[in-house]
Image: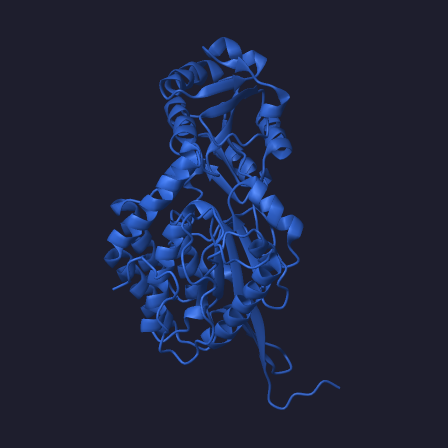
Length: 462
């Protein structure tokens, strides 16, 4: 059973029996407020040293983990899922304290919603870990294998990246998701959550630590940074030779800050400016339903639709009906001049509304005269995250799929489906809009790189 989250003021968690464990956790006690630093916190230079110690411990753990069987890693994941369910009371208590502090700090309703846990969300966290545990083990998979004319056997095999740092905000479920995906892919990880979720993240980390110990794995395989000092982020993203990859999850400001500081490779997406294009050959009912849902059913997430493009030939059949539903949901509409006559209560869009990530009940609406105009708009204002076409015209759908340069392209489906869980990955470490090394929702296989194994029979190259 995971322990409750009332840690002694002067002592850390009990020493694990695993002989591989050598270093204590970064911080021995929880600050009275996750916003405030511990009174005994040394200067930032010491934080850097402590982060480097965590990274060295993670490097040692990753080396050992690379030789651990998939069955052992699966057992640890099952232990995490069971531990999350068993620790529900402790998780909710820690989360309640975070929420109380967050309200006092006037966090926005959107951030409070992301932060909040309940029994349903904890069950979803456990189920996600179980799904990851049940997936085919990506480590050691043969991507390609072939024989050369000279008799050499060439094999391209999937292997872990090594040590991954994940920097994120608000959502406590990211702690278990990230840990599970890294463990499944054979990577050690260092997790740095937002200060607003510190108590919740610590409670989840306790569950993970005990599951690792019970499976005979080094708890250094998954470590949580327990300080809110911003110097910790700088130390993580510049730990070349110790950290192999940084993945920031959060708002554009966080990601930009990480990229500016980082000397370690970063996989990222700055923002999700997602479009729904309603083609002239769209089914009007489908078009209204998808465009409504893509905006309203989760307006503060990166895969929500921020702009609706409508072909002029179908606009009279679609826009008045869509506007009526948006009004009921209190969506603010910002439209181009030729659409205003079909929309009640809409305001004229400014140039800055195109390409903007609202993350709110606000949507930009524009009429286009052709598929090519829609494609040009998306190329100019899109962020490479997710874009959708609604059409019954196969040729139009194929052209859209081929020419839209985004990590996910939807045909007759909401942009909100762009999600690792919905793609069958169990969860996602993030959604990459980069093209190297991974793109789109990233699951366990995307946290692997590969190596070539070459087998000969005394071959020499003259």
